[in-house]
Image 1 (tube, rainbow, N blue to C red):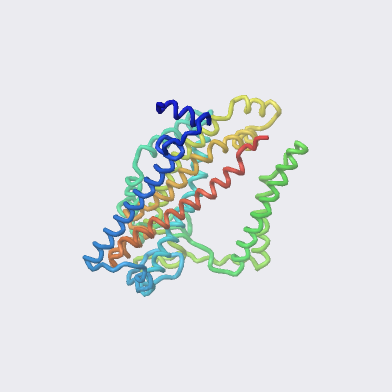
Image 2 (cartoon, rainbow, N blue to C red; image 1 turned 90 degrees about the vertical axis):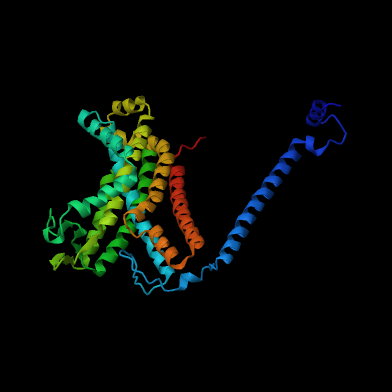
Length: 400
């Protein structure tokens, strides 16, 4: 009996002969998977064993005990209290928070800027459209690392010293030490204002759901934007007034060779933020443009024929449908921004990679340090993906 006959009999169930396992496709597939699993396991064992042997031969300690030792190095920027006497673990937490800070702020600004440029790219105004197109082409063609070097050099090579600092507005100074801003002094009122704002955000979320359901049932449009703006501004304002309207400011003043008071955004932070935002916004703009153009012109013409204004057409007809196309590639761009923040080490911003590299150089725990870098960026990336995928499910079409 030929191999073809045996295969046909197996498929048709017309034979009672015992077929060799190497002729059964299902059994062969299982064997192949077991073989691949064993090869991967052997490769992993070889790499791990070889690494341990080399570490032992060179008398290099392994383990995570170094995290509890004194770091003995300063970090210029930190969101939580930190000094050189703290542990390596706390230093790494400071670096992770710095990465999270620049990534979160960058994502928020990039979404707004990229959306604005993408809509401008489709403007009927020739000048606005061409300006947006030039911005996209220029920013996409210049590597992000070069952009970071440019903005970093702008502060240290072009901007003046603190004594000759530029002051476009009262309480704002720009110099080679960074951007110095006047900020309100710490007051209990601001904590309750933040709490009121968070409660307002939750209320606006449910108000938006109610307005959408009301519009679907009755066809009447609720002035959601005006009402939401009033709620988000009004209740924190009432809270501020209830605490006596405190408005004492910490205004920066030049004392000696530097400013005292206010808050300072370092050149490294500003250069990193501007590089990430301006570079990624160019790609987000193209994503937004493609999403808007994916909606047929008939949708726009139908919306205008029933009397909707251009702004209403964009917000109520175009963007809700375009979001279903925009969200997947937008998620990729947000992940790119988060991962590109690791380039901060090139301009001296103390992000997680920079702090981890210093830790590796001082302790010699390279494997543990690199593992932590991979783990932290994996957590950041997965968190961003989970949120964006959740929102993508919220806006996708549900088929009947």
